Length: 153
Image 1: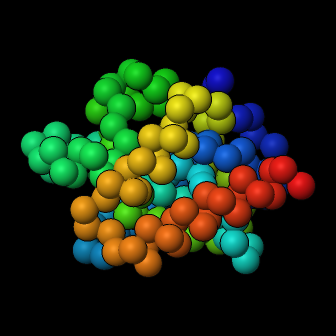
Image 2: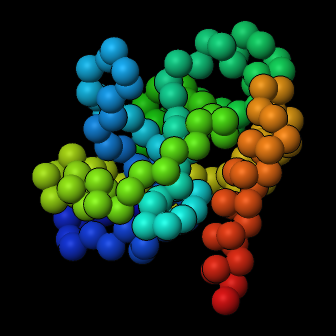
């Protein structure tokens, strides 16, 4: 499915497992667009897992490869390069920030682009993750479960 058209954004309506690109700045780095996958909502925030094209750490270490969801370039329409979705990089992004980026045209949203087995692969990556603590794993799984429960109400 192509990018969502510009319209009044209601962050609560962004689909589960949508891929979102928005300007992001890490300390010491310039602001650039980063990719995230939506996994839940909490207190007027969209919970998102960061994706990265810096895959060498994962492709050269079997334990790390089992700790992520990996897609080769083009396997997902919005990933033009090899991409890793890192379950240990969960970010709460406030609804006001999403709306601001939507209004200034710097927010991109792709819905229904991740394969049907993405959730299963993500849960497996979380369970297998070698660097996440049990508490971190539970936190991410709770976010995933809360969206699942909300969808069945």
